[in-house]
Image (cartoon, rainbow, N blue to C red; front, top):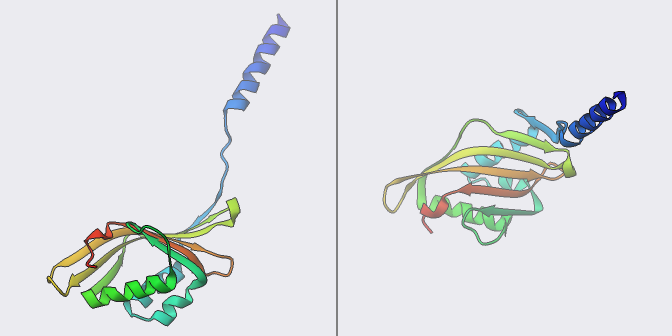
Length: 160
């Protein structure tokens, strides 16, 4: 009888161990980090139309993608595209929603800043104020430069 009880307990413990997964961390989330400052300073450079400073935050091979785009584009093309915003809109603002986080994943040593924004501007054509909430993910390389930037939001209302 003892053997049956021990065997049953052993199988129970083995089953419990096999089906229970221990918690495991895959990195750290930071509320303050120099990479967050890079993203915030990039937003300031965009608003100031300071392309040299803006470009300095990105690697030479950095890519950009936003909702509605068919494929990634180079940062040179992205910055040229962003400059056109000021041809079509006045009083452009980027308002931070909440606060950005720096996410450092152990898996493949991935480094991201996730930030939430509202872009707004007054159309020079119609006089209407357009507001677009969006989330931005900036992936950093080991040199502290942004390698890839992705924006998710409804940019379809922006004038071409």
